[in-house]
Length: 198
Image 1 (spheres, helix red, strand yellow):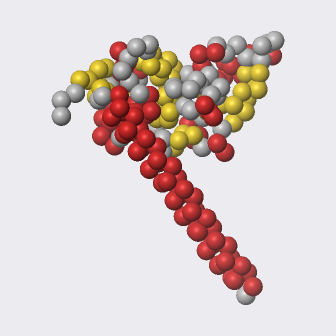
Image 2 (cartoon, one colour; image 1 turned 60 degrees about the vertical axis):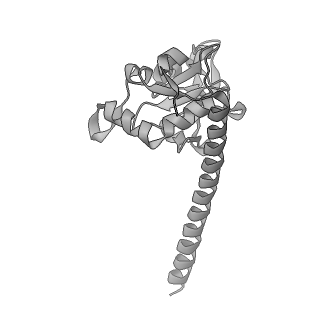
């Protein structure tokens, strides 16, 4: 099948998140607020982990650093997870560990599809190979690497269909992982209770 491709920088604006240290120092300002903050461990498997979001008192943060429906956030550190922002996750402060991708007006791109594409193993492998090293084996993506990602521009209907499939499977996988975790906790609890009686 033939399809066009476009560089991510031609499809989206790309903005690094806010420096959280500076925002916390400005928390004494009149416009300070308590904000939900997206931190690296709150992104996993293409989803936001609600229990990992933190609240910080911040000030002097521009509105552009807060999530809007339709954004895609990509984690700059390993693993390079990407998440799609739905209406339940608007207004979360993105810090400098991540980049905010916003589709440019008139571009033929579903952001849900983009999230799926960025989380695809082949794309992740390519990003990993292009990232630069830091301490303790961690690698970090640069803006130019993200900007140069080549995105296949499938017909919009096909983009949406693939995104629907991805998000359905992803939600099911998260439920399975929860059930596995509960099962492991049950076994450990029963064993501890039995061993404790001896």
